[in-house]
Length: 274
Image (cartoon, rainbow, N blue to C red; front, side):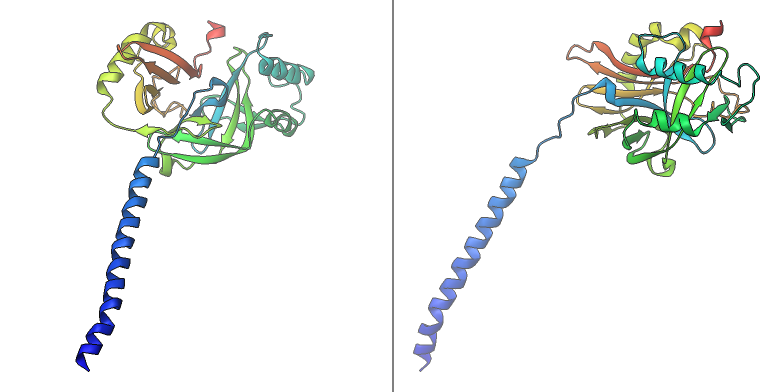
C-alpha cells in the first residue's frame, strides 16, 4: 500500500518541480527585458516654449515676458502697444484709470490689472506649464494676467502661476514640454566655465552692480540650466543688488566650449531711461 502511495505522489512532485523552474525562468526573462527597455527620455530645446519665471510680490510668481513700445518686429509687443494706446495709457498721462486697477504698488514696480487685457493676452499662452524651481518641478496653471507699464519702457506681461515654493524652491523657468531635468549639486567647475564665458555679455556686469554669477541648478545631458538671482529684489526694503535677474540655458561641447542657447532677463533698472 505504501509503495502505491509513493508512486502516486511522484508524478505530482515532478510536475511541481517543473512548474517552479519554469516560473523562475520567466521572471528572469521579464526582469532582463525591463532592464533593456529602460530608455532615457528625449528632449529637444525649443526656445519658443520656455519662459523665465520670477517672483514679483511676496505671494506672486509669474512667467514674465518683456514687451516694448516701438518694437514692430515683435508681434506681442505690437499687440501690447496697440491695446494700451487705444486706451490712452491713463496711468502715464494722469487720466481716469477707467477699468484698470492697481494689482500691486508696494513691490519693485507697479502692476496693473484689466479684465479685457487679461482675456486678450491669456489667449497667447497655454493653460498649464511645467514650472521648474531650484529644487524640483510641478505642473502649474495661469491664475491671473497683469502687466507693468512705466515711463522708461521696461514693460512686461506677467502670467501669475499657482506655484508652491515649498515644493519646488524658488521658481526659475516654465516650459510647455516636460524637461527630464537632472538636479545636482556638483556643478562647481561648470559654473566657473559658464561664468567666464558669459560674464562679458552680461547686462548685470555692463549696466548693473557687476555681480553677475550664474548658478547651475540642473542639466539634461550637455544642456545646463542656470539662474542669476538673489530672489529678494521684489521687496524694495530687502537691499537687493540684483538689477538684471536672468535665466539661461547653456550648451557645453566635448571640448568644454560654452554656447548660450536661450535666456530670459528682467530689467529692474530701466535701461531705456539711461
